Length: 244
Image (cartoon, rainbow, N blue to C red; front, side):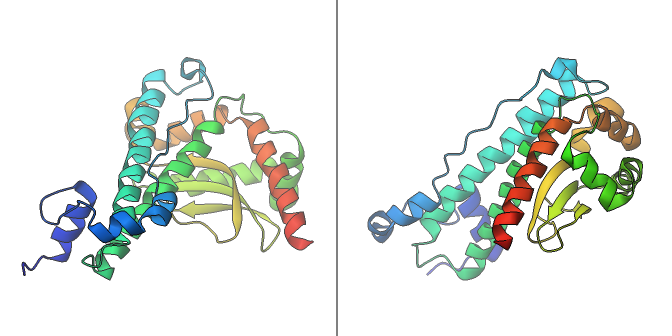
């Protein structure tokens, strides 16, 4: 029997290379219905919910590149991973460590898709906070200005690196908090994202190069606070249901 390394195995399963057979075995063809439902690999990218030519300080070229290459690429990658998982889960020749690597990739790609969808959906506004979420920010941070200062500082800490800044409603504590999230998959457990800021360089380099602070300024000018408020209202209802 041919011996394969962990690296060769995972690359073969993810990319469809020749290092490991990807044709579903007979048992996979008969046992796959449940895994096929769980790992359908049929996600479709969502269209931009705003006109990218009308944002302030963020160019149409930047937004379209971000959406078409990074976000849509994450959707495509998630579909590939899910299809590999559908085969690997019923293939006895796939070792556990290879399956674990696939599950990690699934988590990364899922996080990227979800966070990008939140990011684009919370753009396209006038940057002026209002509604119940404004009241909640005052209660949690003392003032919206203090919230913004802390949000900005968290974002600036990611400049030149990679990650996300997420304003979230924590269901455990009942509080609003700014969280640092790395690699598309790190956030406080049991919390609902209200506002997501992408700090990977692809989100600003076309317009600002390494001047991440200017990108943060532009992002805040375009926040769609009506959407953030909608998410906050939904999180409040969910929190009430959990307490009930």
